Amino acid sequence: MSERKHPGLWVDPEDDPRNTGQSATGEKGVVLEYLDHYRTTLEMKCEDLDAEQLARRSVPPSTMSLLGLVRHLAKVEHSWFRRVLSGQADLPRLYRTDEDPDLDFNGAVADDAVVADAWESWRREVANARQVAEGLDMGATVVRDGESIEVRDVIVHMVEEYARHLGHADLLRECIDGRTGQ
Image (cartoon, rainbow, N blue to C red; front, side):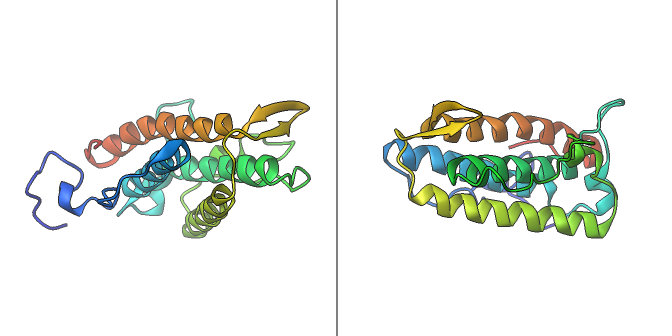
């Protein structure tokens, strides 16, 4: 890691990949920009960690870990963007079975293959979500479990999902190596 000008920050502002120098406009653009900001933050929180560190659990009896969060957020992206917004409700669920509805966290074990699968799944689902989002009308409605919901509610929920879990990621990372959030 190189010497930072601002040692109290995760990265120096000029090196922050979340700062693109462009600002989105309109409701859809702004909300999707926030979502991408949080997606990038998740990657940053997990940088430079090995399988054991990524799978390290928080406080017993919790099964929460950074690896579990990556798997969980891949599952959430898959559920909302494929199953709900794209209408593919019959797709098998990602990191969830009837026997283990919390497989995203329970299966997050310190194994390089599990880590690779988690990142591949998350990146695949994020890429799909970005593609689906391009054609979305924020005021349109979709049906989930027999109820109509607005697309904007789904997208705002995704922002909320990442924001909440990034708070967890901050604490998990700090317990691993002392790095704190930005």
